[in-house]
Image (cartoon, rainbow, N blue to C red; front, side, top):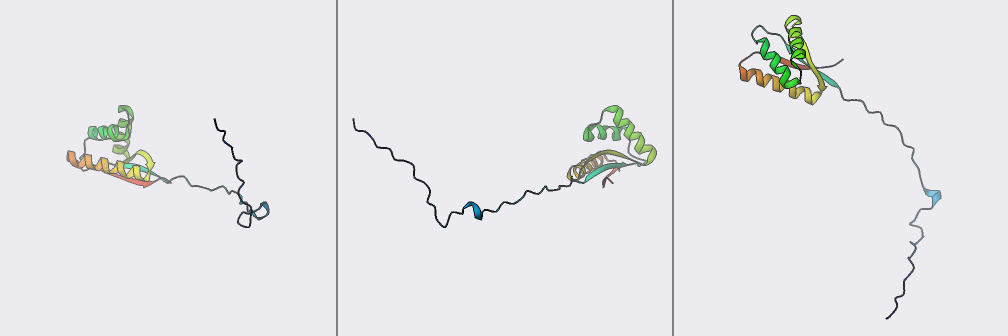
Length: 119
């Protein structure tokens, strides 16, 4: 049986194209300050025509509130003229407003909902 001769691994060439340790530049890592996303609150406005029960159902369906919390928010809307349904990022808040407005229009109610920045 013939024997194979193994070769030693070749070293990479050293020359002018390979920087030596004296030419290396090391940059310091700077901590980046990232601001958290701006938050928006979804606010539902009171009107004299939308049934209170519809507002409670909307709060349960789109804002995941239990019956008790939805009723409390509905009463706040009714007594104070407006109430905060939840606080979300801008895109999520806009989606929630659209969902509420679409549901209200579909049911034939003039319910108004808007989002505003949290201060």
